Image 1 (spheres, protein in one colour):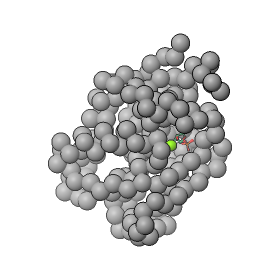
Image 2 (spheres, rainbow, N blue to C red):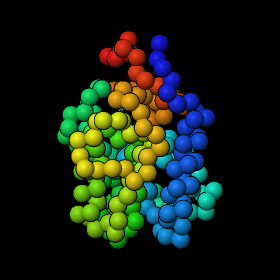
Image 3 (cartoon, protein in one colour):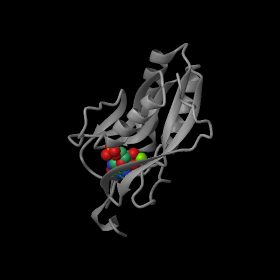
Length: 179
Ligand code: IMP
Ligand code: MG
């Protein structure tokens, strides 16, 4: 049996709190929310809606980033820019949006990549952060909730491209691994 960690209602509250924190810090400034595909999708959509309730205007763009194979990180982070505008992040206040912070290698690589492309400032917002897994000096600027070092799926998070569609987050059960 899989263990539901966060229900739809729990997630809604967490996202609303993150939006309130971001809106308080960035009110009156232009912000580019940069989602890391594919896992950011439901989180970013809900976060945008919550930010609109605070009248914070945001632009949205995406990077396609991958590092995971099955349920373990390959440690090799690959970034693909999707915007046709080469200078899309130059002199912008960028908030990188990711589903989960694990080893930190993704955020480290994306942050350096954005700084090299001339972003004015790079902040980060993650829905989940796994305790005790960080292999870097990175700390997410906005973090929804800390979870233990378990493999989770749902609400955008996948295992071999499965489970992204679930409206809640659950721990992947033993019998679902390689199923
Ligand atoms: P990091 O580079 O190790 O911090 O990993 C970040 C990326 O790994 C996330 O954007 C996810 O795509 C993936 N990831 C890490 N942990 C999990 C998990 O528990 N479930 C699904 N994907 C995960
Ligand atoms: Mg991801």
